[in-house]
Image 1 (tube, helix red, strand yellow):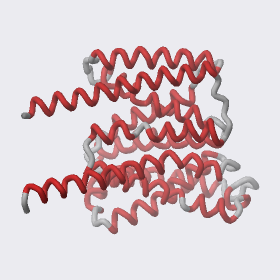
Image 2 (cartoon, helix red, strand yellow; image 1 turned 90 degrees about the vertical axis):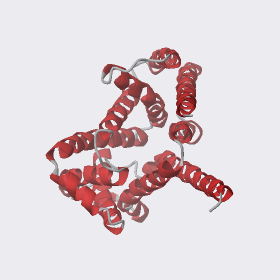
Image 3 (tube, one colour; image 1 turned 180 degrees about the vertical axis):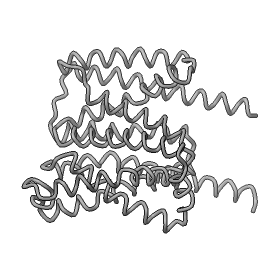
Length: 307
């Protein structure tokens, strides 16, 4: 194969990776509309159904892909399992907060949570890993603190839903780095751990008058049963994207999710965005601009050093 063929193949692979990345992040953002269809039901029950359905789908995918050995090895390793167990608890908290917020008309606050998650990741890096803050990140933190302060005034309270979503997601991401598994096997192990309590909750709520089995129409029942699919599909798309796309491109793309949530909450569900609240979000967006600029400049510096 010639150099031109190699270049063309690499370009095609990157283009496919970018398309997969946009598809994954786009689906994650549009999940807000999916959960709105199920807004009549208890968020805890919905998460029970999501976990139970995800176990079936993800285990089937792992088996079909011939990747059961890594999963079984992880499930037999007490040290790995302890990390997965903590990660699974944080994932459950994040999912539940997100679904609760969506069904209770707090879509814009979920967007805020995922916008400020990078700030929480920076805090973990400084406090836990003793990393030094570069100038752009110091400026980013200052804008984020200012933005959160303005939003606290705007809401008339601390935006605890957004902060809880950001905190649980950031700590979850940090713990995932300590788990020696690929994303598919790691998530599968997490939902396998949660399977028994999730099934127990689904069974315990089965006969309630307002439960999914007793109160859902045909469309809602199908949506509840497919929660495992909508969990697995974006993950698989993201896995394909991460193998083909540089992090300098894939990283900033993650902000597509909260951007979609913000637009859905504001334009579709008519959630109030006052001038003060918009100013707070604007400060958060400036913060993200500095974070992205820092990532890009750091990557360029690393490439120069490697030459």
